[in-house]
Amino acid sequence: MMERRRSQRVPVSKDRFGRVKATVPARIVDISRHGVQLEVPAALRPAVECDLTLPFGTRDLRIRAKVHRCRAMGFSASDEGQRLVYRAGLEFVAVAKADREALFYLVDHLEDDLGAAEKPEPRKGPVKVKIDSGFIRRLEE
Image (cartoon, rainbow, N blue to C red):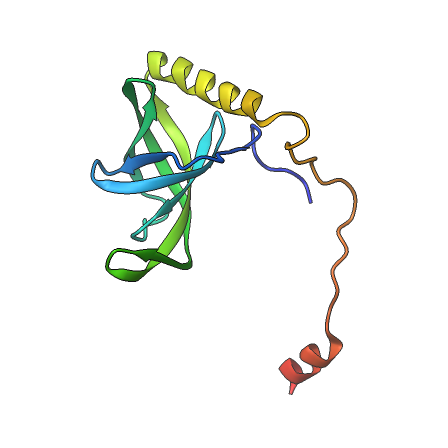
């Protein structure tokens, strides 16, 4: 499968949190120079732009981002019991020049922290998929 992203995503291993719409907490799953994947406690509407705040040292980066997708991913334990968690993919659409430089530094620094052994190799060539013919026959019935 052809990679469609403009820049490599960098997984965020430590729990780092930002905010969406100023009040919704968002755990950063991975980040690139052009977008971010977040875990959020509420669904975000695709194709809608929102304000995103990401921590950077002693200050916050304020970024305008467009939601490309948002899907329920499962349940997470919280103080109130289990709650549904969503994964959202956002593309950065407006970043102030100073914040852009800080964002690029952040992404590059996270990438350096990973170390060569932990970086996943991009997939090349065909992908093998095993298809259960019995399942297909049941679908056709």
